[in-house]
Length: 280
Image 1 (spheres, rainbow, N blue to C red):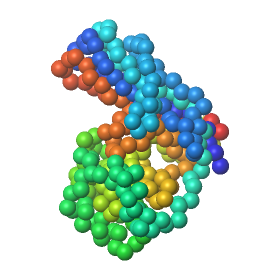
Image 2 (cartoon, one colour):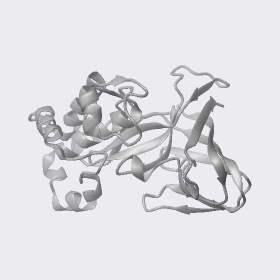
Image 3 (cartoon, rainbow, N blue to C red):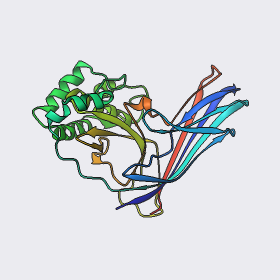
Image 4 (cartoon, rainbow, N blue to C red):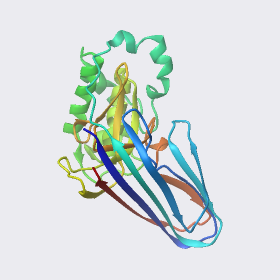
């Protein structure tokens, strides 16, 4: 079954002092892949600015824009319509011989290496060994997903945007970003290539055309099992028609929805609103 989703993602920055210039990158445009097709998309900026679009190293669509007029607020709105498909079955277990082959170790090196968000900390490595416990790669992915979902309690505010997998493990709480980072760190330590996926989730499991939900950007995991397979450790389900993929990378740092610099030292306030509608 396929869904048609309309996504509106608005980010509003309020600056304490007037800003004379800012330089920004937005990653709000869903990808077209073998599982989804972006029918239309646009990114609008206030104050008005001309944007330039390119694909970054990870093949994520990036809209870049500079603002050179004084402004005290910045609003970036990404609007898109995406057709998605149902979740595929998990690939057959590829076996450790394939995952430890030179071709896989070389081709997936970036998704096996630790990062600041997914460090190779001793406690994570020991836990990964316990979870692997003689299982094949496919069963190890399932074990990691079950552990993370049972160990963490979804608690907004328990962690911050810069929190690592170790902090989430110790807090035993977090949000989808933390569920993804902890899963990725454990999978990599167990020898399974894993990458961070960012996008949107329509939370209505039985949504009908016309149903709209409010939410935020969502994060999940893609593990390499002879092919990339996506699962959501936060909700304990494969990634299917309710999900719209925007970007992939090693961790959150590779796919932030919006980042930039501006020439003021005053603090900023941030408001984010995401509305996702099922059209068909």
